[in-house]
Amino acid sequence: MTTQEEFEAAQLRVKAVTSLSNDTLLELYGLYKQSTVGDVDGKRPGMMDIRGRAKYDAWASRKSMTREAAMKAYVALVDRLTSR
Figure 1 (cartoon, rainbow, N blue to C red):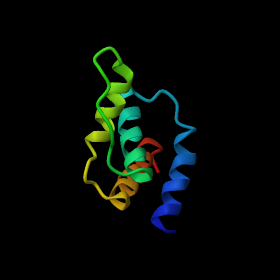
Figure 2 (cartoon, helix red, strand yellow):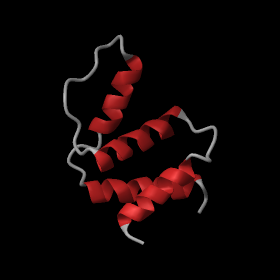
Figure 3 (spheres, helix red, strand yellow):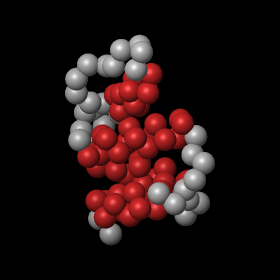
Figure 4 (spheres, rainbow, N blue to C red):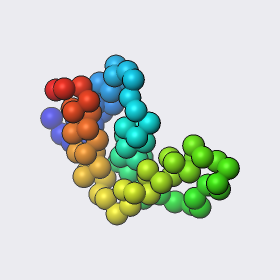
């Protein structure tokens, strides 16, 4: 299976996981965005946009990570969450 196929399969598997912590959700979000879009672009949301700021920071923390590496990290995290 290619990395892209493993990444897509992991996206389907993680949907079945319930009760994820906010930190885990943000980690998944950052890895997903880095895998699909690349480095974060634009300004960091203001202090009043707490949710947007947290998501931006989670994505920005993956800056310069290659898409391939982000996909592999996403799959590894989903594997841990699903005890695969």
